[in-house]
Length: 364
Image 1 (cartoon, rainbow, N blue to C red):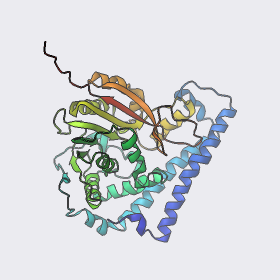
Image 2: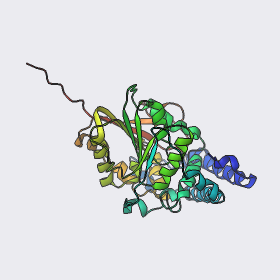
Image 3: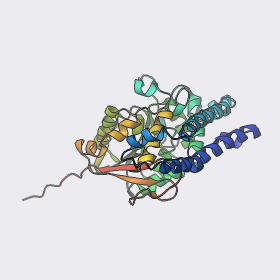
Image 4: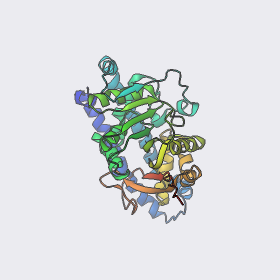
């Protein structure tokens, strides 16, 4: 398949490099300067809320805040222009995509997309990822820059698959909730080659692109358009249920319903794992993460932080639920914590839980 970045003109490449460099300097230069400015005030906030109040009084903060929002808008403008200028060729790739013996695409034209999903341009991406087939290409292009090119080849998602999920040589079924354009789903098939891997998403454009790219890579995945709360998968049939970067984009009630669905479809003894964000305990950093969500049009981020998902797992019959910090650079799961990092970064963490194995009755 055509990789847009391999076709960029000199002007397009220069624009991409400019935004990428701006994002890097925002993270590794402006953020540390903001931290130093904050430290010089002598403030010692106990909570992210307290830190947020003090943060707004810093001279550097308006620049820090403004640059994050501006670079995000520039990112989507550049990505959108690059995609639209190649519209016919890109759309052509989605037509009549052959599937392997176990790959498929099942769309539901009657699926009603929920208001909480359609009412916001999440990530500031105009029109979201559901409005046009090209929107998935735009999202895929932009995601590379958001991750500072550190997730090329989906290294990040491969780390999740290999360090957060159990070895299961004879796994039969794995489901990926909110699979997007397949960046998290394809590594699951590589991790569990014997399993039927199902990717579920609300957005048909995401699924069309995911299916086309999986077929092109000769990776068999079954993609299904459905709500993560009602996947249509049979009770207790999945060895592993995952979701990456999904729950923080849902209101509290939907988060619980999604966890309940994961608990329903996972096998006894199976694993549920969601890659998300969690507060680090460093008040200033956590305040900037919360405000990142506001600048990035992610209105339900607070719902993730304000709810006890470990307790929700227990409520729906899952055990051993816990959050583990996740380092996206090399290590993946990092039980000892995030460690000192001077640059601004997402506080990735993995929520894992298990459905208890069924007890075997012992004959008397």
